[in-house]
Image 1 (tube, one colour):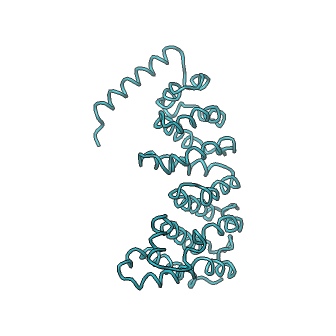
Image 2 (tube, one colour; image 1 turned 30 degrees about the horizontal axis):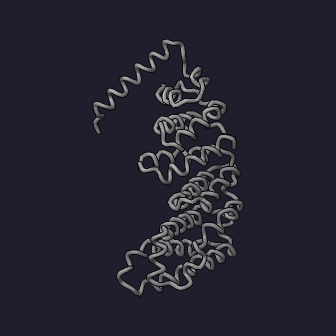
Image 3 (spheres, rainbow, N blue to C red; image 1 turned 60 degrees about the horizontal axis):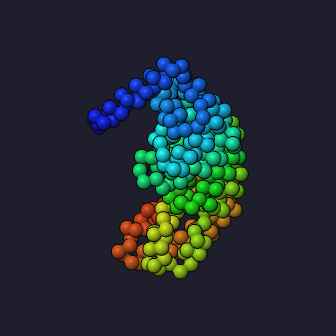
Length: 294
């Protein structure tokens, strides 16, 4: 895609502005000591990323400015650009004082911003921030996103974040909270049940419409996809996902009621395509359970 003339002109003006600031003796480091303003945010965001200060202290000092920008949707591109610089330039562990406010403000942007590009970038930044925080804090945030987040699409997307954490932990030789029984204890009761719990008690076309309207069908498909991956990847049963009692609990709490509902819905041919992804997901999980030795 060609860059528009307006964009090129804007970049030229911004570079002239940066050159003027540099002639006044300001460096990227000295910019961080200026009082918080959108001008400061803009100047930092348009610096060469390799010279922008990215220590935890630098990030923490900018949090009030970043959160205000994201909350008000003002200079949001600059805020996200800075956060990308921070998350990509270091692997330092992020403390709770940084993680909590950034995760709190990035969640609604990633879930509900009108621009899909902004949503995607915000979500990837959120993922990177959570990946750099201590495992107990990461698990706490993920558990909250899965259960308490007011944005349905984020509750669905958070399943992918948990999957990322699990796959990373399972491929590592070091021990991890995300490759231990703590994972299933924290998220199992949230993931492996319908929402609401009685969603499948009286299956009908009306109940199917409801779970589709509320995105529950999408959430369940993601849950079952993760369950399949979890079963197949945790060959040593480090998390306890393959325990007989655990499989039975998930069968009774989710798979059994879902099979019953799918059977009731499938008698109406016109909705077969609607439930196809759920049906396929259940079959894959059944095959996985049949193939493992508990």
